[in-house]
Length: 425
Image (cartoon, rainbow, N blue to C red; front, side, top):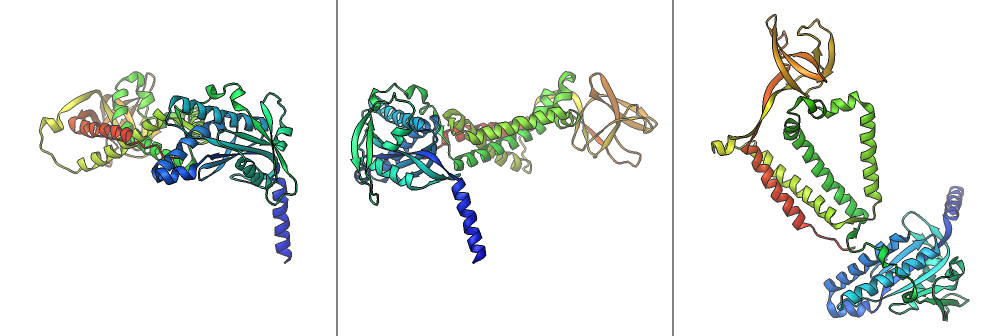
């Protein structure tokens, strides 16, 4: 029992530390039950989605936190009551603008606001303030914004067009709650601040899905870089050192590695904290995922299929001007001169590529003269004295058989863009 009491006391202390003043905003669609009954589930769900897509950006613009959606209602919290009132006004103005542009759009919302102490946790808000805010909202009608007297008292700005709207006694409460109505159509136009048409709201589950899409595309792009791109762009001594082996460049330049890691982390954090995203970017991400999936599904089977199409299969579309030295052994030495007793200039890992400058024979062994720095060359053996191959010299060829998977992958890109579906919020 003592342990249970200590645990309870600890929880009570934690709850008390979580109490703070907040303004709770509730929205609710007027006559939504009748709409669902008359038009069916699909149109009913579409109505809720339209409501959410219009209201989410407005709430977030005024620093609100969407706590939950409850059927056709939204519960949001604000640290500042002025922000909550502006969000409510912005929602009604955005809905009115949409009704003016589209006569078939007749969605009307009532909004209630109440301010008080609440238990604020990471993903939810608890307390009597939530219950009272819901009751305040239920007293309104479509196109109305109702505020409790508690919220009005906390407002530092007196610019809001407020009028008295009577009072009511919530169930279980001894005292009546006095209400004020905000004449939102008399307030300045706030809709110019919103981007609810061009940007789509993001929820955590969608962010996780998009991260998978991005990771798949980046992995495929890195594969293409290793297999094709680096050969093409590095077929010049001026840029070879930068693009043949970027991993070696990062090892030699740790500051560059730190900057790259910081940028990637910053982009990841920015993406995860983003609450909306441009529509076109969502299409591109899905298109990139479509390219990655289709390209890999075509490329790998073709590596094991023997096709006798002659020049239509093995014909060369592009040939490199240089020969490349592919390192086959890990920690292979590049020497200052073509001899094993010479000074080692650097060690290269298996899989690295070096740009071939010349081939030199010394004492019965062949050496590759390779570029290792600006106007700096070294020598790496082809075969060790024990007849173990260290490097393989090759020319880069881009053939028709390499082109076909890329072209089919582009069809996958188009499929990804066209197949993109906007999920309901």
